[in-house]
Length: 57
Image (cartoon, rainbow, N blue to C red; front, side):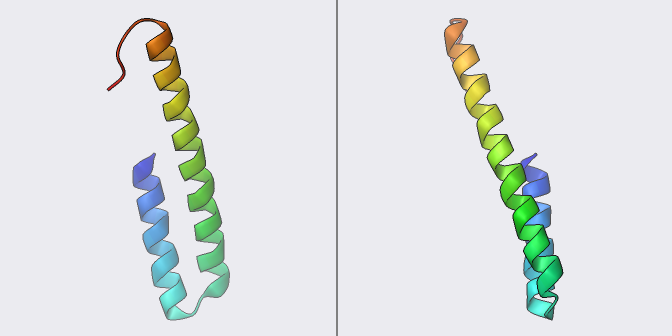
């Protein structure tokens, strides 16, 4: 999931550098959303792991 975040961030930076503001803005918003989802899933996974008695990595 973080691979998608990095790829879309690169697309946004290139599009912004070339002057395509609409594409850059859309890519940044998608990147933010995917990053938030990834962090939330990680936190849920860590809590479930601790609740089951296993140490999370």
